Image 1 (cartoon, rainbow, N blue to C red):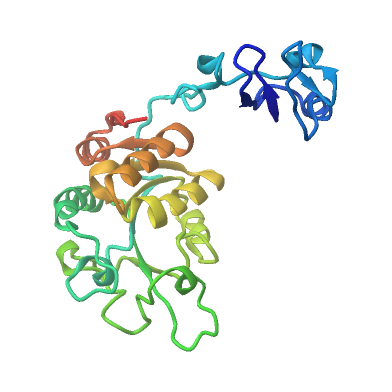
Image 2: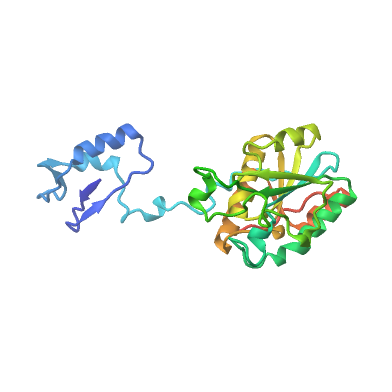
Length: 281
C-alpha cells in the first residue's frame, strides 16, 4: 500500500504485518490506487487519510518493530535429555554411495573423506551393541518416461551400476539391511517404516549425504511418523556451509537432536545422555 508522508511529501510503501486481514482490506480501500499530496499532507482522491493511518505502519518510522529477531520463532522449543537404548535404536546411513563420493560419480560431494572416520565410529559402536545398521541406496531405473528426481537433477545412481553401491570405506556387510529408495526420503514408498516396526525400533540415528536434501527429508518423515531422531553433525555433509548450518539448526529446533559422533558412541556404549551440539541460528 502506498501512502504520502506528510513531512517529506514522498511516497512510502507500507506493509502492516500484524494487521488482521479485514483491517488491511479496509486500509487498502481507503488508500486506493491513486495518492495525491494535499494541504493536510496525506490524502487519497481528496479524502484526508489521518484516520486510516491506524491501519498501517511506516517502515521508515518503525524499523525495529518490523525486524523479526533471527531466533524469535525457533527459540520456543524443548530440549529434553535423550538416551539411546540399543534395544530400540537403529542406524540409518543415507546415500554414502560411489555416485556422490568417488571420482567419476555423476554428482560428487567434495570432502566426503572427512565423514568416514566419525561414521565408522558410530557404525562400530552400533554393531558392538547389537544395533541394526540400515544402508540406504539412492537408485533409479532406466527407461522411465519421467524419472522424478531427474526432472531436477542430473541422471545418477542407475540401477545395476557402480553408482548406487555403498563406498568400500565403510565396510557395509551383506547380512545388514540394504534399502533402495527412489526419492529423497528413505521413507517415501519404501518398506522402511514397516521394517523398523517389525524390529520394534523407535529411535533412529540418521546420517550421510547430503544433509539438506536426502538426510533432511528422511529426518522429517521419521519425525512425522513418531520416531525419536538423532543426527550426528560430523557424520553429515551438505551442499555448502550455509545449507549445513541451516539444516542442522532446523532439525535441532523442530525435528530431533543434533549431536556428534563421540556423544552417540558414548550413548550407545555407556548409556549416557546425548550431548546436543551447538548449531548456529
